[in-house]
Amino acid sequence: MTDWFESDDFWTGFGGTMFDAAAWEDAAEQVDRVEALLEIEPGSRVLDLCCGPGRHALELSRRGYDVLGVDRTERFLDEARRRADDEGLDLDLAQSDMREFVETEAFDVALNLFTSFGYFRDPADDRRVVQNLHDSLRVGGKLLMDMGGKEVIARIFEHKQWRERDGDFYLYERTITDDWGWIENRWIRIDIDDRQEFIVGHRLYSGVELKTLVADVGFTNVNVYGSLDGRPYDTEATRLVLSAEK
Image (cartoon, rainbow, N blue to C red; front, top):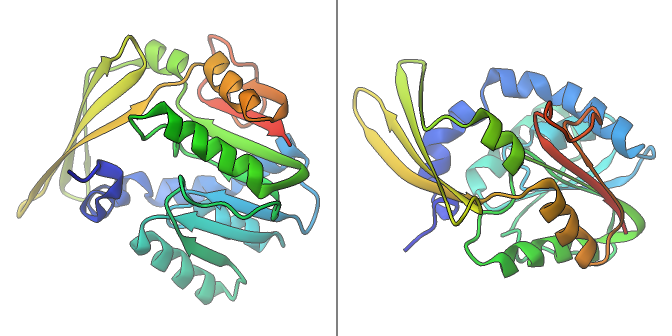
């Protein structure tokens, strides 16, 4: 059975609502915050792991960084490549599963943004991804991860939700399982001609759980924040953001 994240039909059906115009517009400000939080040196070699259609990879490339965007979905890489070509940007792109991708000591900065982590039922796969990120960084290299943290989701949890976009309806039903270790999301898209449904599950990490995992593979100076602007990870947090160094 194919997992949801391996389905091109899923990314085709729901990519438009995940990466809508507002998401593209937000990318520049988000990169501003990433630069400030990590204090990235000009010209750094940057890995954007799970880059999607390239929102952040393109913006980083515009700012003069040497960027490699990695994703498993060829459709997204094609879009990123087209946008880069249209702007004359020198953006490298590669298709790979995040459990497999590693380039030993090749990067100064590694990014994993927009809840692109924890998709796998076996926790060892998550550890493998973090180990790959560690191995891909040069000594002194910096990591930034961004996701919906367990504490944040518990505070804002809605069992059912729907939205309309361009005449299509998107329905979401969420269930917490494994003692708050996993969230199971039923995603349905309905338009006049079609109906799609996927079960989208991923592991939920608390701040301390993610921090412990990252430290266990060898990262140092591990810090957790409540958003990309560096605010504390407390009751007002909107995201779980982690920075670390190799």
